[in-house]
Image 1 (cartoon, helix red, strand yellow):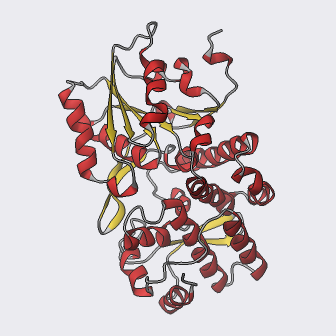
Image 2 (cartoon, rainbow, N blue to C red):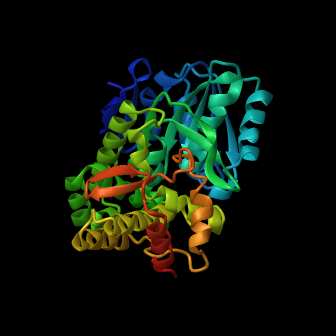
Image 3 (spheres, one colour):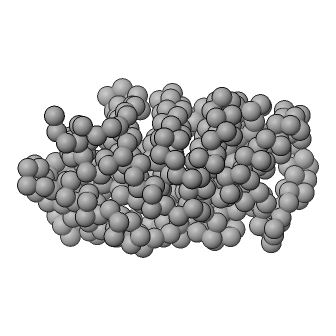
Amino acid sequence: MTASSALPYQRLHVELDARRYPIHVGPGLLDAPDMLVPYLAGRQVMIVTNETVAPLYLERLKRTLSGDDRDVRDVREVILPDGEHTKTLASVERIWDALLAAGFNRRCTLVALGGGVIGDMAGFAAACYQRGVAFVQVPTTLLSQVDSSVGGKTGVNHPRGKNMIGAFWQPRAVLIDTGTLATLPARELSAGLAEVIKYGLIQDADFLAWLEARMPALRGLDVEALTEAILRSCAIKAEIVARDETEQGQRALLNLGHTFGHAIEAHQGYGNWLHGEAVGAGMLMAAALSQRLGWLAADDMARVETLVADTGLPVTAPAAMSADDFLATMRLDKKNIDDRLRLVLLSSLGEACVYDDTPSDMLESLLADFPRA
Protein backbone atom coordinates (compact mmCIF):
# COMPACT_ATOMS: atom_id res chain seq x y z
CA MET A 1 0.00 0.00 0.00
CA THR A 2 1.43 3.38 -0.96
CA ALA A 3 1.32 6.29 1.46
CA SER A 4 -1.17 8.07 -0.78
CA SER A 5 -3.51 5.10 -1.03
CA ALA A 6 -3.64 5.04 2.78
CA LEU A 7 -5.06 8.57 2.88
CA PRO A 8 -8.76 8.88 3.68
CA TYR A 9 -10.51 10.03 0.55
CA GLN A 10 -13.69 9.53 -1.44
CA ARG A 11 -14.13 9.30 -5.19
CA LEU A 12 -16.94 9.86 -7.64
CA HIS A 13 -16.95 10.13 -11.42
CA VAL A 14 -18.22 12.33 -14.19
CA GLU A 15 -19.67 9.78 -16.60
CA LEU A 16 -18.84 10.80 -20.16
CA ASP A 17 -18.35 7.37 -21.75
CA ALA A 18 -14.74 7.11 -22.94
CA ARG A 19 -13.95 10.46 -21.33
CA ARG A 20 -15.11 9.37 -17.87
CA TYR A 21 -12.97 10.97 -15.18
CA PRO A 22 -12.67 10.85 -11.39
CA ILE A 23 -13.15 13.47 -8.70
CA HIS A 24 -10.98 12.63 -5.69
CA VAL A 25 -11.95 14.35 -2.41
CA GLY A 26 -10.02 14.19 0.85
CA PRO A 27 -7.32 15.73 3.05
CA GLY A 28 -3.66 15.66 2.07
CA LEU A 29 -4.23 14.66 -1.55
CA LEU A 30 -1.69 17.20 -2.80
CA ASP A 31 0.90 14.74 -1.48
CA ALA A 32 -0.67 11.71 -3.21
CA PRO A 33 1.17 10.91 -6.46
CA ASP A 34 -1.05 7.99 -7.39
CA MET A 35 -4.03 10.36 -7.43
CA LEU A 36 -2.34 12.53 -10.09
CA VAL A 37 0.44 10.82 -12.01
CA PRO A 38 -1.80 8.21 -13.77
CA TYR A 39 -3.75 11.05 -15.38
CA LEU A 40 -0.78 12.77 -17.00
CA ALA A 41 -0.52 12.37 -20.76
CA GLY A 42 3.26 12.24 -20.91
CA ARG A 43 6.49 13.46 -19.32
CA GLN A 44 5.94 17.20 -19.76
CA VAL A 45 3.86 18.99 -17.09
CA MET A 46 3.07 22.70 -16.80
CA ILE A 47 1.57 23.80 -13.48
CA VAL A 48 -0.53 26.94 -13.87
CA THR A 49 -1.06 28.86 -10.64
CA ASN A 50 -1.09 32.40 -9.28
CA GLU A 51 0.90 34.63 -6.94
CA THR A 52 -1.37 33.90 -3.97
CA VAL A 53 -1.52 30.10 -4.26
CA ALA A 54 2.06 29.46 -5.40
CA PRO A 55 3.73 30.22 -2.03
CA LEU A 56 1.25 27.92 -0.28
CA TYR A 57 1.10 24.82 -2.45
CA LEU A 58 3.33 24.96 -5.54
CA GLU A 59 6.39 23.23 -4.08
CA ARG A 60 4.26 20.45 -2.56
CA LEU A 61 2.64 19.76 -5.90
CA LYS A 62 5.98 19.83 -7.74
CA ARG A 63 7.43 17.28 -5.30
CA THR A 64 4.40 15.05 -5.84
CA LEU A 65 4.76 15.21 -9.62
CA SER A 66 8.54 15.01 -9.93
CA GLY A 67 9.85 12.94 -7.02
CA ASP A 68 12.78 10.59 -7.59
CA ASP A 69 10.49 7.62 -8.21
CA ARG A 70 8.13 9.45 -10.53
CA ASP A 71 8.18 8.87 -14.27
CA VAL A 72 7.91 12.62 -14.90
CA ARG A 73 11.04 14.42 -16.03
CA ASP A 74 10.00 17.93 -16.90
CA VAL A 75 7.76 19.85 -14.48
CA ARG A 76 7.54 23.60 -15.08
CA GLU A 77 5.30 26.32 -13.75
CA VAL A 78 3.77 29.59 -14.88
CA ILE A 79 2.70 31.94 -12.09
CA LEU A 80 0.04 34.49 -13.01
CA PRO A 81 -1.30 37.49 -11.10
CA ASP A 82 -4.31 36.83 -8.87
CA GLY A 83 -7.86 38.09 -9.33
CA GLU A 84 -10.89 37.95 -11.60
CA HIS A 85 -9.64 41.00 -13.50
CA THR A 86 -6.75 38.86 -14.81
CA LYS A 87 -9.09 36.36 -16.51
CA THR A 88 -8.23 37.60 -19.99
CA LEU A 89 -6.78 36.38 -23.26
CA ALA A 90 -3.55 38.19 -22.34
CA SER A 91 -3.14 35.90 -19.31
CA VAL A 92 -3.86 32.82 -21.41
CA GLU A 93 -1.21 33.97 -23.88
CA ARG A 94 1.30 33.90 -21.02
CA ILE A 95 0.48 30.22 -20.54
CA TRP A 96 0.92 29.51 -24.25
CA ASP A 97 4.20 31.48 -24.23
CA ALA A 98 5.49 29.32 -21.35
CA LEU A 99 4.49 26.11 -23.14
CA LEU A 100 6.18 27.16 -26.37
CA ALA A 101 9.31 28.42 -24.62
CA ALA A 102 9.62 25.03 -22.89
CA GLY A 103 9.11 23.16 -26.16
CA PHE A 104 6.07 21.27 -24.83
CA ASN A 105 4.43 18.91 -27.28
CA ARG A 106 0.98 17.37 -27.72
CA ARG A 107 1.61 14.88 -24.92
CA CYS A 108 2.05 17.58 -22.31
CA THR A 109 -0.36 18.10 -19.42
CA LEU A 110 -1.47 21.36 -17.85
CA VAL A 111 -2.24 21.19 -14.12
CA ALA A 112 -4.46 23.98 -12.80
CA LEU A 113 -3.52 24.79 -9.18
CA GLY A 114 -5.79 27.47 -7.77
CA GLY A 115 -9.32 28.79 -7.83
CA GLY A 116 -11.86 29.13 -10.59
CA VAL A 117 -9.98 31.81 -12.52
CA ILE A 118 -6.85 29.67 -12.80
CA GLY A 119 -8.88 26.55 -13.63
CA ASP A 120 -10.85 28.30 -16.36
CA MET A 121 -7.76 29.85 -17.98
CA ALA A 122 -5.60 26.72 -17.75
CA GLY A 123 -8.42 24.64 -19.23
CA PHE A 124 -8.91 27.10 -22.08
CA ALA A 125 -5.17 27.18 -22.74
CA ALA A 126 -5.17 23.36 -22.83
CA ALA A 127 -8.17 23.28 -25.18
CA CYS A 128 -6.36 25.50 -27.70
CA TYR A 129 -2.68 24.55 -27.39
CA GLN A 130 -1.78 22.40 -30.40
CA ARG A 131 -5.55 21.95 -30.84
CA GLY A 132 -6.01 20.32 -27.47
CA VAL A 133 -3.80 18.82 -24.76
CA ALA A 134 -4.53 17.14 -21.45
CA PHE A 135 -5.21 18.99 -18.23
CA VAL A 136 -5.95 18.18 -14.60
CA GLN A 137 -7.79 20.32 -12.07
CA VAL A 138 -6.38 20.82 -8.56
CA PRO A 139 -8.82 23.40 -7.12
CA THR A 140 -7.87 25.19 -3.90
CA THR A 141 -10.98 27.31 -3.20
CA LEU A 142 -14.40 26.06 -2.16
CA LEU A 143 -16.05 27.66 -5.17
CA SER A 144 -13.72 25.91 -7.60
CA GLN A 145 -13.96 22.62 -5.70
CA VAL A 146 -17.75 22.46 -5.85
CA ASP A 147 -18.32 24.07 -9.23
CA SER A 148 -15.84 25.39 -11.75
CA SER A 149 -13.34 22.50 -11.64
CA VAL A 150 -16.02 19.98 -12.65
CA GLY A 151 -17.72 19.87 -16.04
CA GLY A 152 -15.23 21.22 -18.56
CA LYS A 153 -16.32 24.83 -18.94
CA THR A 154 -13.23 26.91 -19.66
CA GLY A 155 -12.67 30.44 -20.85
CA VAL A 156 -12.00 34.09 -20.17
CA ASN A 157 -13.97 37.26 -19.65
CA HIS A 158 -14.61 40.07 -22.10
CA PRO A 159 -15.20 43.68 -20.98
CA ARG A 160 -18.79 43.34 -22.21
CA GLY A 161 -19.58 39.98 -20.65
CA LYS A 162 -18.28 37.27 -18.34
CA ASN A 163 -17.01 33.98 -19.80
CA MET A 164 -17.96 35.02 -23.31
CA ILE A 165 -14.84 33.47 -24.88
CA GLY A 166 -14.14 29.83 -24.12
CA ALA A 167 -14.52 26.15 -24.89
CA PHE A 168 -15.84 22.93 -23.39
CA TRP A 169 -12.73 20.92 -22.50
CA GLN A 170 -12.95 18.22 -19.86
CA PRO A 171 -10.13 17.54 -17.39
CA ARG A 172 -8.64 14.09 -17.03
CA ALA A 173 -9.15 14.22 -13.27
CA VAL A 174 -10.13 16.57 -10.46
CA LEU A 175 -8.15 16.36 -7.22
CA ILE A 176 -9.76 18.16 -4.27
CA ASP A 177 -7.49 18.44 -1.24
CA THR A 178 -9.86 19.63 1.49
CA GLY A 179 -6.87 20.77 3.53
CA THR A 180 -6.44 23.76 1.23
CA LEU A 181 -9.59 25.29 2.69
CA ALA A 182 -7.73 26.00 5.94
CA THR A 183 -5.95 28.89 4.21
CA LEU A 184 -9.08 30.26 2.51
CA PRO A 185 -10.18 33.77 3.62
CA ALA A 186 -13.66 33.98 5.14
CA ARG A 187 -14.94 36.08 2.25
CA GLU A 188 -13.80 33.45 -0.27
CA LEU A 189 -15.40 30.70 1.81
CA SER A 190 -18.74 32.51 1.75
CA ALA A 191 -18.41 33.00 -2.01
CA GLY A 192 -17.97 29.25 -2.45
CA LEU A 193 -20.96 28.51 -0.27
CA ALA A 194 -23.12 30.45 -2.72
CA GLU A 195 -22.54 27.74 -5.32
CA VAL A 196 -23.24 25.04 -2.72
CA ILE A 197 -26.60 26.66 -1.93
CA LYS A 198 -27.35 26.71 -5.65
CA TYR A 199 -27.31 22.91 -5.82
CA GLY A 200 -29.87 22.61 -3.07
CA LEU A 201 -32.11 25.22 -4.67
CA ILE A 202 -32.11 23.69 -8.15
CA GLN A 203 -32.30 19.96 -7.40
CA ASP A 204 -32.17 18.81 -3.77
CA ALA A 205 -34.53 20.23 -1.16
CA ASP A 206 -33.15 17.83 1.46
CA PHE A 207 -29.65 19.17 0.84
CA LEU A 208 -31.04 22.69 1.18
CA ALA A 209 -32.45 21.83 4.62
CA TRP A 210 -29.11 20.21 5.53
CA LEU A 211 -27.33 23.45 4.62
CA GLU A 212 -29.70 25.49 6.75
CA ALA A 213 -28.82 23.31 9.75
CA ARG A 214 -25.06 23.09 9.04
CA MET A 215 -24.23 26.65 7.96
CA PRO A 216 -22.48 27.57 11.24
CA ALA A 217 -20.34 24.43 10.97
CA LEU A 218 -19.54 25.14 7.32
CA ARG A 219 -18.49 28.71 8.03
CA GLY A 220 -16.47 27.42 10.97
CA LEU A 221 -14.45 25.17 8.61
CA ASP A 222 -15.77 21.95 10.09
CA VAL A 223 -13.97 19.33 8.00
CA GLU A 224 -16.76 16.74 8.06
CA ALA A 225 -19.43 19.25 7.06
CA LEU A 226 -17.30 20.76 4.29
CA THR A 227 -16.42 17.35 2.88
CA GLU A 228 -20.09 16.36 2.78
CA ALA A 229 -21.02 19.66 1.11
CA ILE A 230 -18.30 19.19 -1.52
CA LEU A 231 -19.30 15.60 -2.26
CA ARG A 232 -23.01 16.35 -2.56
CA SER A 233 -22.38 19.40 -4.73
CA CYS A 234 -20.00 17.55 -7.05
CA ALA A 235 -22.37 14.59 -7.30
CA ILE A 236 -25.23 16.84 -8.43
CA LYS A 237 -23.06 18.66 -10.95
CA ALA A 238 -21.54 15.43 -12.28
CA GLU A 239 -25.02 13.98 -12.83
CA ILE A 240 -26.20 17.05 -14.74
CA VAL A 241 -23.03 17.33 -16.84
CA ALA A 242 -23.25 13.64 -17.77
CA ARG A 243 -26.72 14.26 -19.20
CA ASP A 244 -25.95 17.56 -20.94
CA GLU A 245 -22.23 18.18 -21.40
CA THR A 246 -22.43 21.22 -23.69
CA GLU A 247 -25.42 22.97 -22.11
CA GLN A 248 -28.06 22.26 -24.72
CA GLY A 249 -30.74 21.90 -22.05
CA GLN A 250 -30.64 20.87 -18.40
CA ARG A 251 -27.08 22.03 -17.70
CA ALA A 252 -28.32 25.61 -17.95
CA LEU A 253 -29.99 25.05 -14.56
CA LEU A 254 -26.52 25.29 -13.01
CA ASN A 255 -26.66 28.99 -13.87
CA LEU A 256 -29.25 29.88 -11.23
CA GLY A 257 -28.52 33.47 -10.20
CA HIS A 258 -25.69 33.76 -12.70
CA THR A 259 -27.42 35.95 -15.29
CA PHE A 260 -28.07 38.60 -12.63
CA GLY A 261 -24.72 37.93 -10.96
CA HIS A 262 -22.66 38.21 -14.14
CA ALA A 263 -24.30 41.57 -14.79
CA ILE A 264 -23.16 42.75 -11.36
CA GLU A 265 -19.60 41.55 -11.96
CA ALA A 266 -19.35 43.22 -15.37
CA HIS A 267 -20.87 46.49 -14.18
CA GLN A 268 -18.81 46.74 -11.00
CA GLY A 269 -15.55 45.69 -12.65
CA TYR A 270 -14.32 42.10 -12.46
CA GLY A 271 -12.97 41.30 -9.01
CA ASN A 272 -14.71 44.05 -7.04
CA TRP A 273 -17.50 41.61 -6.28
CA LEU A 274 -16.37 38.02 -5.95
CA HIS A 275 -18.18 35.67 -8.32
CA GLY A 276 -19.94 33.88 -5.47
CA GLU A 277 -21.02 37.17 -3.91
CA ALA A 278 -22.63 38.23 -7.18
CA VAL A 279 -24.25 34.80 -7.57
CA GLY A 280 -25.63 35.04 -4.02
CA ALA A 281 -27.38 38.33 -4.81
CA GLY A 282 -28.39 36.93 -8.20
CA MET A 283 -30.05 33.89 -6.62
CA LEU A 284 -32.08 36.21 -4.42
CA MET A 285 -33.17 38.14 -7.50
CA ALA A 286 -34.12 34.93 -9.29
CA ALA A 287 -36.07 33.77 -6.23
CA ALA A 288 -37.84 37.13 -5.96
CA LEU A 289 -38.85 36.94 -9.62
CA SER A 290 -40.06 33.38 -9.10
CA GLN A 291 -42.20 34.64 -6.24
CA ARG A 292 -43.69 37.37 -8.44
CA LEU A 293 -44.58 34.71 -10.99
CA GLY A 294 -46.46 32.87 -8.24
CA TRP A 295 -44.09 29.90 -8.03
CA LEU A 296 -42.61 30.53 -4.58
CA ALA A 297 -44.55 31.31 -1.40
CA ALA A 298 -43.51 34.07 0.96
CA ASP A 299 -42.14 31.47 3.39
CA ASP A 300 -40.01 29.97 0.60
CA MET A 301 -38.59 33.37 -0.24
CA ALA A 302 -37.83 34.03 3.41
CA ARG A 303 -35.89 30.76 3.65
CA VAL A 304 -33.71 31.71 0.68
CA GLU A 305 -33.09 35.19 2.07
CA THR A 306 -32.16 33.84 5.49
CA LEU A 307 -29.80 31.21 4.13
CA VAL A 308 -27.96 33.66 1.87
CA ALA A 309 -27.65 36.13 4.74
CA ASP A 310 -26.44 33.40 7.13
CA THR A 311 -23.73 32.53 4.60
CA GLY A 312 -22.31 36.05 4.88
CA LEU A 313 -23.16 36.96 1.30
CA PRO A 314 -24.58 40.28 0.05
CA VAL A 315 -28.37 40.41 0.06
CA THR A 316 -28.58 43.66 -1.91
CA ALA A 317 -27.57 44.84 -5.37
CA PRO A 318 -24.96 47.57 -5.94
CA ALA A 319 -26.32 51.01 -5.09
CA ALA A 320 -25.30 52.64 -8.36
CA MET A 321 -26.61 49.88 -10.63
CA SER A 322 -29.91 50.69 -12.34
CA ALA A 323 -32.42 48.36 -13.94
CA ASP A 324 -31.13 49.48 -17.33
CA ASP A 325 -27.58 48.60 -16.26
CA PHE A 326 -28.73 45.08 -15.43
CA LEU A 327 -30.65 44.63 -18.66
CA ALA A 328 -27.81 45.87 -20.88
CA THR A 329 -25.55 43.03 -19.73
CA MET A 330 -28.26 40.40 -19.27
CA ARG A 331 -29.19 40.71 -22.93
CA LEU A 332 -25.71 39.39 -23.79
CA ASP A 333 -26.14 36.23 -21.71
CA LYS A 334 -25.07 33.02 -23.48
CA LYS A 335 -28.36 31.26 -22.66
CA ASN A 336 -30.39 33.75 -24.70
CA ILE A 337 -31.81 32.51 -28.01
CA ASP A 338 -33.36 34.65 -30.76
CA ASP A 339 -33.26 37.77 -28.56
CA ARG A 340 -35.35 36.09 -25.86
CA LEU A 341 -33.98 36.51 -22.35
CA ARG A 342 -33.78 33.04 -20.77
CA LEU A 343 -33.57 32.98 -16.99
CA VAL A 344 -33.09 30.13 -14.56
CA LEU A 345 -35.91 30.41 -12.01
CA LEU A 346 -37.31 28.32 -9.18
CA SER A 347 -40.58 26.48 -9.70
CA SER A 348 -40.19 25.38 -6.06
CA LEU A 349 -37.38 24.99 -3.55
CA GLY A 350 -35.33 22.12 -4.93
CA GLU A 351 -36.61 22.41 -8.51
CA ALA A 352 -35.54 24.88 -11.19
CA CYS A 353 -36.48 25.63 -14.79
CA VAL A 354 -35.25 27.72 -17.70
CA TYR A 355 -37.92 30.31 -18.48
CA ASP A 356 -38.01 32.68 -21.45
CA ASP A 357 -41.46 34.20 -21.07
CA THR A 358 -41.01 36.62 -18.17
CA PRO A 359 -43.16 39.73 -18.81
CA SER A 360 -40.74 42.58 -19.50
CA ASP A 361 -42.56 44.94 -17.15
CA MET A 362 -42.34 42.38 -14.33
CA LEU A 363 -38.60 41.93 -14.82
CA GLU A 364 -37.98 45.67 -15.04
CA SER A 365 -40.05 46.23 -11.89
CA LEU A 366 -38.12 43.52 -10.03
CA LEU A 367 -34.80 45.04 -11.08
CA ALA A 368 -35.93 48.51 -10.05
CA ASP A 369 -37.40 47.40 -6.71
CA PHE A 370 -34.66 45.05 -5.54
CA PRO A 371 -32.85 46.48 -2.48
CA ARG A 372 -29.65 48.41 -3.11
CA ALA A 373 -26.75 49.16 -0.79
